[in-house]
Length: 484
Picture (cartoon, rainbow, N blue to C red):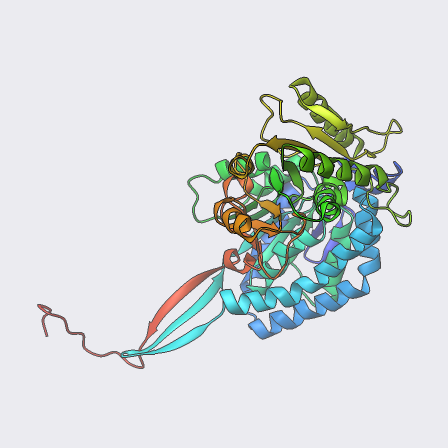
């Protein structure tokens, strides 16, 4: 494995502290090296600024060719990418394989988005011609999360490079291994040195990067960190910020005819990727009475039957959480809910083996008090029982977040209400909340972001528009009261 700093197309040891990442399924080291210190970060920024001059002037057709070759290189490395992700964060191998495929598919989607949302056009005008073009910002810092350590930073890097920006990628210290494979794929595709630099490390490395002379920060992660970044760049409107910060997502189930299908949707919404997707359902809203009881019973049956194991174990649905610390944080969160009046219908338990393994959990919070409106990254769903659909909508919207939500129902009238009244950037009917199309925007209101959604809309924050009026030659100007 390569060490902690990739600058001007070369890997070398970082000047910061040594750190390692352990596989949460086995405890074995999956990555180790030295983090980038402030001097390393400064060198990466200088490299990116130097490369920007040439890359931004490279014709778009050539940039597209390089990114399309990058897609081919990702395809060649798909197996290595999936294994690296699974070893670092514990994700089931089939889940990581899907992530690797999504990384490759991102290029074609990003090219289409760039041409549609940040392309060029000319219009005839009385004076000659009106033209719209888009310009890159400059050097973009990309902070990657651990849950999709390849796909999500790739979703920033690819559209940024297509638009003519250069990037400095700080992978999550909890899932660092895939960055080396991404860098090698870019290198093989012919990306010029300095257009992508990598700085490994934790908080100190990130702090040095946001203090550096960057032109943009593209971030996916927790609300607390995103809010910190927003405050840090207050008063600096020249720095573009794209913040995606998760959610406390509601799923309403309201009298569908197929209880088993509803339970499938709820269980996958809550427990996919061991609950480590920012679009996972965190709150399940049900009607009081026999129907709600039946749904809960069916979800419990599914939760008890979920196969859990190491990433390379065949036919598992859930792997561990990203670390042993994350597992015990999930236990503590559940204990807090129970201490405030919640009832653990199916308790979350953590392995005692020093791994990140936990069991799926369902906690009834209908009678609980003062439950914090926070996102727990784990397989725990809170159940709320309500008396009517008005109350269901109100409870769904009772959050400072707004990323994802859903309604499972057969009634078109109820869906029409939910579609109009629920506050969520991704709002699904009769589908799991945990998932989204790369051909659509990804983001939401409230503390889920700063209204710069990613995925297809990443093209919007990777370039700024330039409007021009063009005349073939200068002519005398006239206006009422203007001297001729």
